[in-house]
Length: 292
Ligand code: AMP
Ligand code: ZN
Ligand code: FE
Ligand code: FE
Image 1 (cartoon, rainbow, N blue to C red):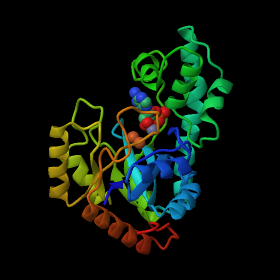
Image 2: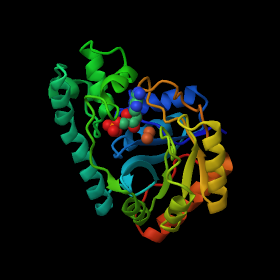
Image 3: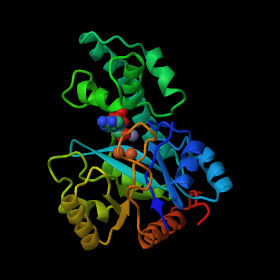
Protein backbone atom coordinates (compact mmCIF):
# COMPACT_ATOMS: atom_id res chain seq x y z
CA UNK A 1 0.00 0.00 0.00
CA UNK A 2 1.45 3.38 -1.05
CA UNK A 3 0.61 6.28 1.26
CA UNK A 4 1.65 9.86 0.40
CA UNK A 5 0.39 12.33 3.03
CA UNK A 6 1.70 15.74 1.93
CA UNK A 7 0.84 17.33 -1.44
CA UNK A 8 -0.23 20.68 -2.84
CA UNK A 9 -2.73 21.91 -5.43
CA UNK A 10 -3.54 25.20 -7.08
CA UNK A 11 -5.52 26.09 -3.93
CA UNK A 12 -2.05 27.12 -2.75
CA UNK A 13 1.21 26.83 -4.69
CA UNK A 14 0.87 23.49 -6.48
CA UNK A 15 0.48 23.53 -10.25
CA UNK A 16 -2.36 20.96 -10.47
CA UNK A 17 -6.05 21.25 -9.70
CA UNK A 18 -7.22 18.83 -6.99
CA UNK A 19 -8.73 16.65 -9.72
CA UNK A 20 -5.47 16.61 -11.69
CA UNK A 21 -3.56 15.76 -8.52
CA UNK A 22 -5.87 12.81 -7.79
CA UNK A 23 -5.47 11.53 -11.36
CA UNK A 24 -1.68 11.82 -11.07
CA UNK A 25 -1.70 10.05 -7.70
CA UNK A 26 -3.64 7.11 -9.14
CA UNK A 27 -1.19 6.97 -12.07
CA UNK A 28 1.72 6.94 -9.59
CA UNK A 29 0.21 3.93 -7.79
CA UNK A 30 -0.74 5.89 -4.67
CA UNK A 31 -3.48 4.22 -2.59
CA UNK A 32 -3.91 6.89 0.08
CA UNK A 33 -3.32 10.58 -0.61
CA UNK A 34 -3.07 13.49 1.80
CA UNK A 35 -3.99 16.86 0.27
CA UNK A 36 -2.30 19.52 2.37
CA UNK A 37 -2.34 22.96 0.80
CA UNK A 38 -0.70 25.83 2.63
CA UNK A 39 -3.08 27.44 5.14
CA UNK A 40 -6.35 26.50 3.42
CA UNK A 41 -8.96 23.77 3.04
CA UNK A 42 -10.09 25.30 -0.26
CA UNK A 43 -9.15 22.24 -2.33
CA UNK A 44 -10.83 19.66 -0.09
CA UNK A 45 -14.24 19.38 -1.73
CA UNK A 46 -12.94 18.95 -5.26
CA UNK A 47 -10.30 16.48 -4.02
CA UNK A 48 -12.99 14.49 -2.21
CA UNK A 49 -15.20 14.27 -5.31
CA UNK A 50 -12.26 13.22 -7.49
CA UNK A 51 -10.90 10.68 -4.97
CA UNK A 52 -14.35 9.17 -4.51
CA UNK A 53 -14.77 8.80 -8.28
CA UNK A 54 -11.27 7.32 -8.65
CA UNK A 55 -11.48 4.97 -5.66
CA UNK A 56 -8.49 6.67 -4.03
CA UNK A 57 -8.16 6.92 -0.24
CA UNK A 58 -8.07 10.55 0.85
CA UNK A 59 -6.91 12.28 4.03
CA UNK A 60 -7.82 15.95 4.04
CA UNK A 61 -5.30 18.22 5.67
CA UNK A 62 -3.47 21.51 5.44
CA UNK A 63 0.08 22.73 6.03
CA UNK A 64 -0.10 25.64 8.46
CA UNK A 65 2.65 28.29 8.51
CA UNK A 66 3.68 28.60 12.14
CA UNK A 67 6.56 29.97 14.17
CA UNK A 68 8.39 28.64 17.22
CA UNK A 69 10.94 30.86 18.97
CA UNK A 70 11.34 33.03 15.88
CA UNK A 71 11.82 30.14 13.45
CA UNK A 72 9.35 29.02 10.82
CA UNK A 73 7.75 25.60 11.32
CA UNK A 74 5.31 24.03 8.85
CA UNK A 75 2.63 22.10 10.70
CA UNK A 76 0.58 19.47 8.89
CA UNK A 77 -2.93 19.46 10.35
CA UNK A 78 -4.91 16.40 9.34
CA UNK A 79 -8.69 16.17 9.47
CA UNK A 80 -9.56 19.28 11.51
CA UNK A 81 -13.02 20.81 11.22
CA UNK A 82 -12.20 23.68 8.82
CA UNK A 83 -15.22 25.67 10.06
CA UNK A 84 -14.05 25.77 13.72
CA UNK A 85 -14.03 29.56 14.32
CA UNK A 86 -10.65 29.80 16.13
CA UNK A 87 -9.03 27.80 13.30
CA UNK A 88 -10.70 30.01 10.68
CA UNK A 89 -9.44 33.11 12.52
CA UNK A 90 -5.91 31.72 12.81
CA UNK A 91 -5.77 30.84 9.08
CA UNK A 92 -7.32 34.18 8.05
CA UNK A 93 -4.49 35.98 9.80
CA UNK A 94 -1.87 33.87 8.00
CA UNK A 95 -3.63 34.33 4.64
CA UNK A 96 -3.77 38.10 5.21
CA UNK A 97 -0.01 38.03 5.84
CA UNK A 98 0.46 36.15 2.56
CA UNK A 99 -1.65 38.68 0.60
CA UNK A 100 -0.04 41.76 2.06
CA UNK A 101 3.44 40.38 1.39
CA UNK A 102 2.89 40.32 -2.40
CA UNK A 103 3.04 44.13 -2.91
CA UNK A 104 5.94 44.30 -0.42
CA UNK A 105 7.95 41.79 -2.47
CA UNK A 106 7.11 43.62 -5.70
CA UNK A 107 8.36 46.89 -4.17
CA UNK A 108 11.66 45.24 -3.24
CA UNK A 109 12.02 43.74 -6.73
CA UNK A 110 11.42 47.19 -8.22
CA UNK A 111 14.48 48.40 -6.30
CA UNK A 112 16.59 45.98 -8.35
CA UNK A 113 14.80 47.04 -11.55
CA UNK A 114 12.53 44.01 -11.83
CA UNK A 115 9.09 45.35 -12.71
CA UNK A 116 6.10 43.16 -11.91
CA UNK A 117 2.55 44.26 -11.12
CA UNK A 118 0.06 42.70 -8.74
CA UNK A 119 -1.99 41.80 -11.83
CA UNK A 120 1.00 39.87 -13.23
CA UNK A 121 1.04 37.80 -10.03
CA UNK A 122 -2.76 37.43 -9.93
CA UNK A 123 -2.72 36.05 -13.48
CA UNK A 124 -0.48 33.14 -12.45
CA UNK A 125 -1.94 32.54 -8.96
CA UNK A 126 -5.45 32.30 -10.42
CA UNK A 127 -7.99 31.62 -7.69
CA UNK A 128 -5.48 30.22 -5.18
CA UNK A 129 -6.70 30.87 -1.63
CA UNK A 130 -3.10 31.07 -0.39
CA UNK A 131 -0.72 33.22 -2.40
CA UNK A 132 2.97 32.51 -2.01
CA UNK A 133 6.45 33.19 -3.25
CA UNK A 134 6.06 30.44 -5.88
CA UNK A 135 3.39 32.57 -7.58
CA UNK A 136 5.77 35.53 -7.72
CA UNK A 137 8.35 33.07 -9.10
CA UNK A 138 5.87 32.04 -11.81
CA UNK A 139 5.27 35.68 -12.69
CA UNK A 140 9.04 36.14 -13.01
CA UNK A 141 9.11 33.16 -15.40
CA UNK A 142 6.28 34.61 -17.49
CA UNK A 143 8.13 37.96 -17.60
CA UNK A 144 11.21 36.14 -18.89
CA UNK A 145 13.36 37.17 -15.91
CA UNK A 146 14.11 33.59 -14.80
CA UNK A 147 13.75 30.14 -16.35
CA UNK A 148 11.92 28.41 -13.49
CA UNK A 149 10.74 28.67 -9.88
CA UNK A 150 14.01 27.33 -8.58
CA UNK A 151 16.04 30.10 -10.25
CA UNK A 152 13.56 32.68 -8.94
CA UNK A 153 14.07 31.47 -5.37
CA UNK A 154 17.86 31.32 -5.73
CA UNK A 155 18.21 34.79 -7.27
CA UNK A 156 15.37 36.74 -5.67
CA UNK A 157 13.06 35.07 -3.18
CA UNK A 158 15.12 33.12 -0.64
CA UNK A 159 16.06 34.83 2.64
CA UNK A 160 18.91 37.24 2.06
CA UNK A 161 18.02 37.79 -1.59
CA UNK A 162 16.71 41.14 -2.92
CA UNK A 163 13.04 40.12 -3.16
CA UNK A 164 12.75 38.43 0.21
CA UNK A 165 10.11 39.65 2.64
CA UNK A 166 9.10 37.85 5.84
CA UNK A 167 5.45 37.32 6.65
CA UNK A 168 3.20 36.52 9.59
CA UNK A 169 3.04 32.91 10.85
CA UNK A 170 0.83 31.57 13.63
CA UNK A 171 2.32 30.64 17.02
CA UNK A 172 3.10 26.91 16.87
CA UNK A 173 1.91 25.93 20.35
CA UNK A 174 -1.41 27.72 19.86
CA UNK A 175 -1.85 26.09 16.44
CA UNK A 176 -1.37 22.58 17.86
CA UNK A 177 -4.05 23.35 20.48
CA UNK A 178 -6.51 24.83 18.00
CA UNK A 179 -6.07 21.90 15.57
CA UNK A 180 -6.84 19.46 18.41
CA UNK A 181 -9.89 21.50 19.46
CA UNK A 182 -11.02 21.29 15.82
CA UNK A 183 -10.85 17.50 16.03
CA UNK A 184 -7.66 17.14 13.99
CA UNK A 185 -4.11 15.91 14.54
CA UNK A 186 -0.79 17.74 14.08
CA UNK A 187 2.41 16.48 12.44
CA UNK A 188 5.53 18.63 12.01
CA UNK A 189 6.42 18.81 8.31
CA UNK A 190 10.08 18.43 7.22
CA UNK A 191 11.11 19.21 10.81
CA UNK A 192 14.79 19.75 10.01
CA UNK A 193 14.43 20.60 6.35
CA UNK A 194 16.61 23.25 4.72
CA UNK A 195 18.26 24.10 8.02
CA UNK A 196 21.83 23.98 9.13
CA UNK A 197 20.79 23.45 12.73
CA UNK A 198 18.83 20.44 13.88
CA UNK A 199 16.03 22.34 15.51
CA UNK A 200 13.55 21.92 17.07
CA UNK A 201 15.69 19.51 19.09
CA UNK A 202 14.42 16.49 21.00
CA UNK A 203 13.63 18.51 24.16
CA UNK A 204 11.56 21.02 22.17
CA UNK A 205 9.76 18.25 20.30
CA UNK A 206 9.04 16.49 23.62
CA UNK A 207 7.40 19.67 24.91
CA UNK A 208 5.28 19.87 21.75
CA UNK A 209 4.30 16.21 22.16
CA UNK A 210 3.03 17.09 25.65
CA UNK A 211 0.93 19.83 24.04
CA UNK A 212 -0.68 17.31 21.68
CA UNK A 213 1.69 16.95 18.71
CA UNK A 214 0.98 13.53 17.18
CA UNK A 215 3.69 12.95 14.60
CA UNK A 216 6.86 13.89 12.74
CA UNK A 217 7.35 13.87 8.99
CA UNK A 218 10.65 12.01 8.85
CA UNK A 219 10.97 10.84 5.25
CA UNK A 220 11.10 14.02 3.19
CA UNK A 221 13.39 15.19 0.40
CA UNK A 222 14.81 17.97 2.58
CA UNK A 223 16.19 15.40 5.08
CA UNK A 224 19.40 13.49 4.43
CA UNK A 225 19.86 9.95 5.75
CA UNK A 226 21.40 11.15 9.02
CA UNK A 227 18.55 13.55 9.76
CA UNK A 228 16.02 10.82 9.00
CA UNK A 229 17.71 8.37 11.37
CA UNK A 230 17.87 10.93 14.19
CA UNK A 231 14.27 12.07 13.72
CA UNK A 232 13.07 8.46 13.58
CA UNK A 233 14.82 7.78 16.88
CA UNK A 234 13.24 10.89 18.45
CA UNK A 235 9.81 9.80 17.24
CA UNK A 236 10.35 6.35 18.72
CA UNK A 237 11.44 7.81 22.08
CA UNK A 238 8.43 10.10 22.24
CA UNK A 239 5.90 7.62 20.80
CA UNK A 240 5.17 9.93 17.86
CA UNK A 241 3.79 8.75 14.51
CA UNK A 242 6.39 8.70 11.70
CA UNK A 243 5.22 9.88 8.29
CA UNK A 244 6.89 10.10 4.90
CA UNK A 245 5.66 12.06 1.92
CA UNK A 246 6.55 13.72 -1.33
CA UNK A 247 5.51 17.35 -0.69
CA UNK A 248 4.52 17.23 -4.36
CA UNK A 249 3.77 20.58 -6.05
CA UNK A 250 3.00 19.33 -9.57
CA UNK A 251 5.71 20.71 -11.84
CA UNK A 252 6.40 23.53 -9.34
CA UNK A 253 9.09 21.84 -7.29
CA UNK A 254 11.72 19.55 -8.78
CA UNK A 255 12.60 16.29 -7.03
CA UNK A 256 9.27 15.93 -5.26
CA UNK A 257 7.51 13.35 -7.43
CA UNK A 258 4.42 11.71 -5.95
CA UNK A 259 5.29 8.80 -3.62
CA UNK A 260 9.05 9.57 -3.68
CA UNK A 261 8.68 9.08 0.09
CA UNK A 262 5.82 7.17 1.68
CA UNK A 263 4.23 6.47 5.06
CA UNK A 264 4.16 2.92 6.43
CA UNK A 265 0.61 1.50 6.60
CA UNK A 266 0.83 0.85 10.36
CA UNK A 267 1.93 4.45 10.93
CA UNK A 268 -1.07 5.63 8.87
CA UNK A 269 -3.28 3.49 11.07
CA UNK A 270 -1.82 5.10 14.22
CA UNK A 271 -2.36 8.56 12.73
CA UNK A 272 -5.97 7.83 11.83
CA UNK A 273 -6.65 6.28 15.24
CA UNK A 274 -5.35 9.46 16.87
CA UNK A 275 -7.53 11.53 14.53
CA UNK A 276 -10.61 9.48 15.42
CA UNK A 277 -9.91 10.07 19.13
CA UNK A 278 -9.36 13.79 18.56
CA UNK A 279 -12.58 14.02 16.59
CA UNK A 280 -14.58 12.29 19.34
CA UNK A 281 -12.99 14.39 22.11
CA UNK A 282 -13.58 17.67 20.23
CA UNK A 283 -17.28 17.25 19.58
CA UNK A 284 -16.64 19.01 16.25
CA UNK A 285 -17.92 17.74 12.88
CA UNK A 286 -14.36 17.07 11.70
CA UNK A 287 -14.01 15.28 8.34
CA UNK A 288 -13.17 11.60 8.30
CA UNK A 289 -10.76 9.86 5.97
CA UNK A 290 -12.39 8.85 2.70
CA UNK A 291 -12.30 5.41 1.10
CA UNK A 292 -10.34 3.75 3.92
P1 AMP B 1 5.88 30.98 0.99
O1 AMP B 1 4.84 29.98 1.41
O2 AMP B 1 5.32 32.05 0.20
O3 AMP B 1 6.73 31.45 2.13
O4 AMP B 1 6.86 30.18 0.02
C1 AMP B 1 7.47 29.00 0.46
C2 AMP B 1 7.06 27.86 -0.43
O5 AMP B 1 7.76 27.97 -1.66
C3 AMP B 1 7.46 26.52 0.15
O6 AMP B 1 6.45 25.97 0.93
C4 AMP B 1 7.71 25.70 -1.06
O7 AMP B 1 6.51 25.10 -1.45
C5 AMP B 1 8.10 26.68 -2.13
N1 AMP B 1 9.53 26.68 -2.47
C6 AMP B 1 10.57 26.98 -1.67
N2 AMP B 1 11.74 26.89 -2.34
C7 AMP B 1 11.42 26.53 -3.61
C8 AMP B 1 12.19 26.27 -4.79
N3 AMP B 1 13.52 26.41 -4.80
N4 AMP B 1 11.52 25.91 -5.90
C9 AMP B 1 10.18 25.79 -5.89
N5 AMP B 1 9.41 26.03 -4.81
C10 AMP B 1 10.01 26.39 -3.68
ZN1 ZN C 1 4.42 24.92 -1.09
FE1 FE D 1 6.48 23.00 3.85
FE1 FE E 1 4.46 21.44 1.58
